Length: 518
Image (tube, rainbow, N blue to C red):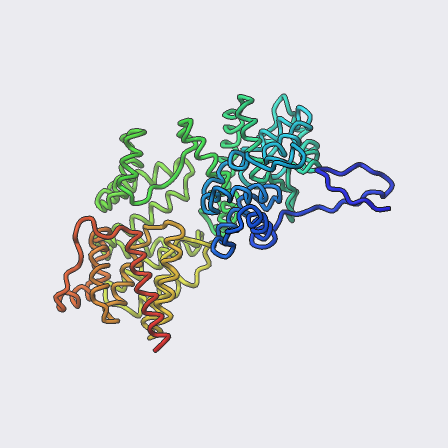
């Protein structure tokens, strides 16, 4: 006789009488979505599976493909649309508190299911389970020992407790070529975080986690500042969710020693930050204000003391960023000879010692400088060299806009429009509004040559308002627009950055479609 049983852990039968088959989470885009659609259709006959497919996949992904969670979420379609459910999944346990009317009590709500498993744990396993909630992503044994161990849970016991949690399906074991890694499903993590808060130890454990993150960031920083930048970026990508959690905790408790970042060009955001924390008389504060307000004279004044301060404290990666900012400031303020010399020296340094991203960006800066100086062949050579530099995946770079520029110059207009439109998709998706200036430059120049002067004038006006230092790159286009008696749009309250990107994408998509049909 054979018995098929489902259980949260193995039954403990010996002599080969038990065979374990691990049931993996459901595929959010496959069986998970089908389960949701089936259960939603049962409680809501008018449920439109085709219209809500994307939202359903998003729900299943947030729920880690857990069948019970998916079924309980589908039951909420009697009163909420899938989009409403997806928008409320920051707290799975609260959203899915209303469950089945039939079945075992522990299966009627998601919280009840997790609570039942939690209640069966021993005291030490419960404490460890609570503390592991600070990890938003995967972690290994050594990391768990660093963050979770203390006199109540000796480090020597952490490994056995992790194994116990994994055997009870409270913890997921992930394959790794070097060492075992663990991860809490989001539902489990939210429950454990609630229990940790009740214990009164949340800040203590979060502080240990934040300090661990800071140590990891320091190691990754050394990789990012040298030739091993790609490896550093891969590690950073993996640990990013934990870094965000640690940073948010540091901000919440006011631990400035754990806060480290570089400001974008957002004057409003800078002023809010300065108003909240104050603005000390410090080279970094002065440099930050100059960078935010595009004050090139201020950047030149405060760069040297800021770089010196950073290097004295081992912050070499930020110091390198500040050095390339000095070169950019010289170029954009019209000091072309000094700017070229500064950036060329950086190119020589980055060729020998890295990091690749700064070599890539420095070559692009020199390329734009050569373009302004009327040396298109030299500019193309520098742009091609920049494109050949291997940089980490998803590096924020104007390389795609330059690729579009090159294709347009070779007469491949449809391809150029598609490339630039795709790059705009990327900017909108990542929220990278800083790169809009380069995008505007290429768009304006293309539209003038495509005889779309009104669209060119609209984006020229936006460029003048948001990044006037790029004016030399569109000087010829400006003369053409002026000769046609079309005035750039300088009206206050015009397009914001997001609207400008959307407009450019619409025009580019239309032009690409028109040429493909011609």
